Image (tube, rainbow, N blue to C red):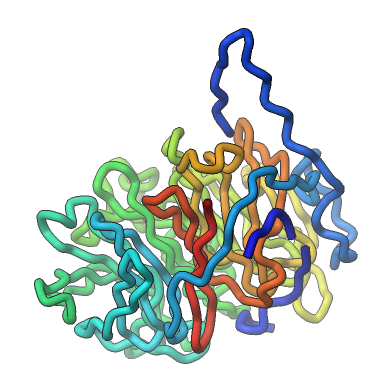
Amino acid sequence: MQQSCGLDDGTDPTIEGPEGSEQGSDDEEPEAPEETLDPVETNEPNTDYSPAFEGQTRVSGVLTKATFTTTIFATGLSSPWGMANLPDGRILVTEKSGTMRLVSASGTVSGPIMGAPAVNSSGQGGLLDVAVDPDFEENRMVYWTFSQNGPDGTATAVAKGRLSDSEDELENVEVIYTAIPEFESTAHYGSRLAWDGQGNLFVSTGDRSSAVTRPEAQELDAALGKVLRITTNGEPVADNPFVSQAGVLPEIYSYGHRNVQGLAIHPVTGDLWESELGPRGGDEVNLIEAGVNYGWPTISYGLEYNGEAIGSGITQQNGMEQPVYYWDPVVSPSGIDFYSGNAIPEWTNNLFLGALSGQHIVRLVIEDNIVVGEERLLEDEGQRFRDVLDGPDDALYALTDGDNAVIYRIGL
């Protein structure tokens, strides 16, 4: 099938309650500017909140000019959650039940890779994100997040292990980090991973979807509602922002988050970006900076599921960072990635997000850290999209959610 644009939204039923340009020669025809359209969101917002600045929400729509192709690349995955590229062009995929699978460059799905620790796969839990060691060709190390059972409930945990030479087992498995406190909930684990460019891991956590634990997102002695930065041994990185402060978890990198299910590094700037599920309205995209408070649950552009205000119903407060972009009503953003290829130049360095309740792929055009255009792709497929991966072949790979899930390839 061929596609150029898209449109729609909803509430996720699984959740509780800048581009470069090339200078051509003088006789070259200048490239036509990208067409801008009305905002892609046409549904009424849940709130009457006003954005803090122009372009923070419902920015102008854009339409991809290139004709690209969408194909089903791989089938037969069971409730997958995360994807990571292997150096040889294959994709490593997690399944919530506790297994991983390898997908070949032709789309063939392997048998299950066993050996991960037991997971709690109830609700939003299970074997979640995965990251392949930058030195995988030498050490074959894999890192993943999962919902771990403990004496006081469940927690987001990080483990590592070696992918066996036979590629059907994880060897020498070790849990390197557990986000405290444990809590009796099966929701809001967060749970994305991203490499920081220095061999360390960013890890996201959620607020665990409870009025009891929600305030922990603002507390620096708890790992809930945070972006963390740890070494491959699970230790805090030495230059983390709170590493020398007494009574503070030194692994914390940023705080005030609700449920971060997307992390990605900008391919040019090296900046860390995230996507965050809001309540009833208020899904966010944030540019993450060390030591910064992103406001949840003190400020929010969303409402409680019963329609009441979050806290005191404010959207701005001194000392709390504003989202670069937000959605109201929600699209339920999960995994994200930047397109670093050149096959579709208008996409280069754009941010792509998998929308769960929105059932489409979001394309955000970002210039100087400001969103200047939004497009919806694959909305006619009727799929919940769990993750997006920038492939080594100048294509994007989009992973659907639930039973009998598939991977779409989007490119030329």
